[in-house]
Image: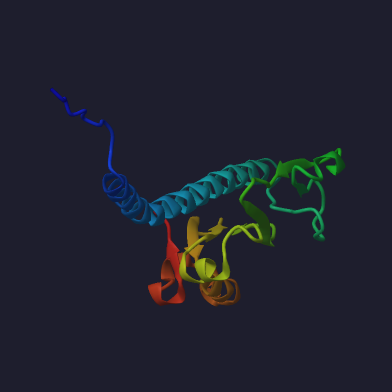
Length: 180
């Protein structure tokens, strides 16, 4: 008498169905993952800018000025360095490190009474279409005080408009939004 042997395992069709299902799930999850990564980078930049703003406010509390190195203010001034040039930081005054892996930071306006910080994604971090469509550029204005996030075109408008002194007046059409 002959016995038939049962084969164990998966057929090729079953494996292909499983692979197709995994590919569909991955295609659905990938955009959400990218959005999560952008949001995490933006939150990290906001935290760094908040720390910097607090350092500037402490400096103002002590010296009654937001004088920044390279301006015609009288010392003590605030100097900004990155990790790359931290060794060249001045020995006097207050030194603030403005650096992280994903954003470049700068002060776009500083005088004796107020300042504006800008956080911009590092070159090559995002393609041009992502920068144009997503609010990934941050501003912090000490005169309001508020964080504003903008698209690339919105950031250009924000910096050149009179509304830069009052971010809460920005309509959504400008590509900028006040962050809560």
